Image (cartoon, rainbow over all chains, first blue to last red; front, side):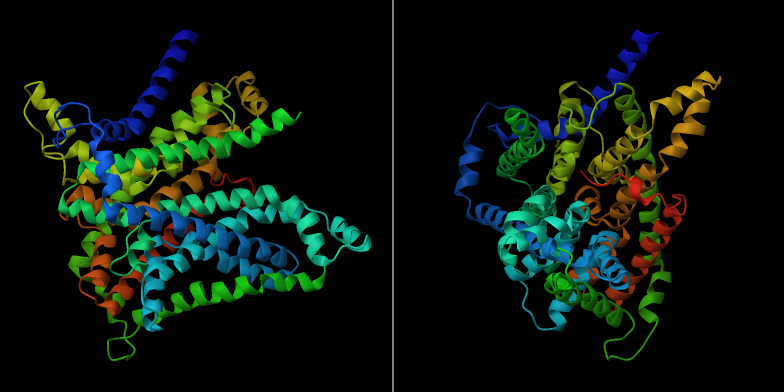
Length: 262
Length: 276
């Protein structure tokens, strides 16, 4: 009976894994298929990868995606970390107000956030382009940073900061040498979260980008109407692999490092 | 850092959220309640009562509800199994189930398009087996599969977090007192996992209700949802007033459904499993 139960549950886990990964595996396989057909295997090739590397639109989209993800995560992390410290020291009334506004982008549907930003940019005559995507991404990244850093700010003691000042540190020194290291785990996870959120976003980018600039998501969306080229499969494979490696490092490296230190 | 002056560290942030959260929301409210001549009107909101707008909203509600239900039915047994096997937070198995959450969702929809297309992978396999080709893409089922596939990890994670927090002793006590598996499930485990269920349902229902990319890519423009209507108002028809009005209606629907779902969660916010 126990054995049967175990087999059944393993079977269930495998089915879900199959459902989740079979489509991704299909893309990986097709990226090496020399024919354009999706139904027939016509031999192994890496041509699609070379074609992808030579394709200016794909490379520009990839570059945009990475730059926007990095910059928006960085700026959101700086603004958000400072904000978390500040908010924690506010009176409860203003703290609650700020936190409610902070939650709006997380509660609101992405389509509404995207449209509201687009309308606002156009109403105030800000032309759409790289910078508007960046502003939008920073905006939806901020709540994630604050929610990651806030618990660390609450746990941290105010005494260490004051001790540093008493021992002759300037406030800036005390911030970088005492306060920030204490918050660091929250800051890094906030940055990682913001980075991945930005990489993955489609809806908000779709509304806040102008003509002529693409990220990976918007490029895929526009390709779908024209018919998908196998270079897209090569691109997907590269992205899936990168996400996998980055997450592996992000998830397991801290644990592994701390084990080594011991 | 408890000094009063550290409050001002939040200043740049406050300026940012006023500029890019509060003002944009006021802009959309302004457009929603005015006509192209800047005169006050409720006509944009009333547009939802028109058949062409009401129908996609109804269809989106139905699809999002089905998607949420299917995700729950798939994810709950999975989370139960992980709990029973005592699979820990950092384990590779949990990593495998949560990983797709971080992969570009458009690429994952693209994968399903490749599978379901008329000359796609599934039909290719059917032909190879001398079976008749199936009409898979551009159907409601295709859109539903895409939604379930896209949002399933967002149900798995909070359910897993909630179930792992339930004390074994509580469950064992129920068994010792003579409860059957079914009774333990409905009287102990389900009530204790409500916070996880609530956040899972919100994380699946809201994006499913408002999507336009999935319905466009797998529905081929035939499965028209409220998200598609709004997207068209802005990107093709450039009717901002009507688009804003419909967005406000959608916002109300999202808020109401979230209040409804949160109503089941009795203020246990602190225990809720968040994102990764």
